[in-house]
Length: 161
Image (spheres, one colour):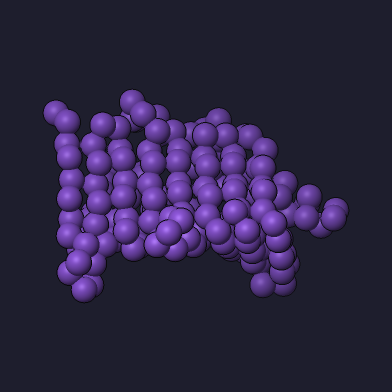
């Protein structure tokens, strides 16, 4: 149990990047099952998993956190068609929380990129985007949306000027 606490404390300085206050907050993890493999730099949370740090909330049936012994490098949240993975975080340059849902959400920490795949939907301020895949570039405040490979999920967006 002490290794789990140590691992979670190590995550604190590097997991949240959008708000300077987020990275100073403790990480709260909830799940039915937790597997931590320190040698591989991987932790797996399953069963209505939820990770919260400051304004950042990530929830899904399965969440994987990858690290390189000092920093978290990538987070993958996996849902399914019935219960999508969910990402929510306050952004200093937005009037509202950024919220996203998809079957799979990959958060690339160093690139400051959130990749949504499968029934992807993103709300940024008062604008919303949906498609087969979406990439949200946090650093450059840019959204890239694409249709699904089979063409059934076209790109839709609403922009409030």
